[in-house]
Amino acid sequence: MINDLSDLIMDKGNWLAAGVAVATFLTVLTLTSGWLSGASLEKRMKSVAGRREELRRRSREAIATQGGLRQADDGFKKRIVDQLNLQKLLEDPKVAEKLMQAGLRGPRPLTTFYFFRFASPFVLMALSFLYLTFVNDFGLVGFQKLTAVVVFFAIGFYAPNIYVSNRISKRRASIVAAFPDSLDLLLICVESGMSIEAAINKVSQEVGGSSIELAEELSLLAAELSYLPERRLAYEGLSKRTAHPGIKAVTTAMVQAEQYGTPLGAALRVMAKENRDLRLSAAEKKAAALPAQLTVPMILFFLPVLFVVILGPAIINIMDTMG
Image (tube, rainbow, N blue to C red; front, side, top):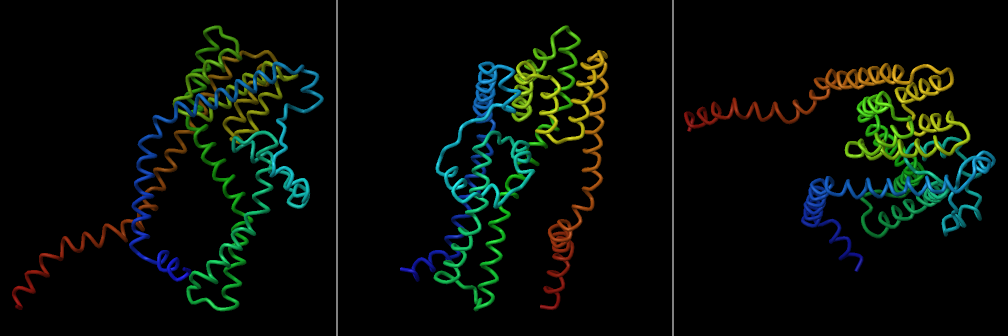
């Protein structure tokens, strides 16, 4: 049975079929992502609305004393984390902030992170050991197998951090790409006479088509502006959740505008221009780096084809002449 499983895994035809299946799945997923985005936006907005209702039910004094609203977490992973005391064993002072930047709020994602950070090294180590022992050892012996198992153990330990970092990068890129346009819409709403909470709510509804993440953050900002004890805390929360210099500058300007009574429209106009300039400079930076990034693909893919097109007819003529 093990030999049959090994033959099944090492068969090139099976690998080719699996690759075609994965490519087909990714193609279908890409084509249907536009249809599914509306449902995802609606789900996230409902989640934010639920949080707003929770904030409404609690008093400002309770929020101030408890440091925010927390969801209960008493599942299987929570019991494992508590019994093994993983929060102290794998303590990371910045993990809660990173999860918040990745859009994972509350105690449950924190418990899940610690659980997988503890379990994934041992799972990958066991799977790699079983594969190298019973399926295919790739010609490795003794110490080489041990080294491979240790490498997989290290990969499993850092895999949760890598996943969170990738999620933070994608979320931040989506927010930053749509943020200058949302600032322009916010400026129009404020100058038309709307309050800042109503303007943020309106912008969150309009910007959802281009960035679901930004719509979620703006809706949460509007809820916290209404129910947190200090409005400054709401702006600082948005700055921490996004961790982007441009958004931090905007939140600082809005805090100062409310604190010193300066016109909010003027501050938003300046901040919108600065964020558009930041987006333009980022695009110019990518365009300037494009020639260097295309060097290796051109050498590997374009030049061989060019040589075949140019030299192919000449080589065929020479072979016909000599023949």
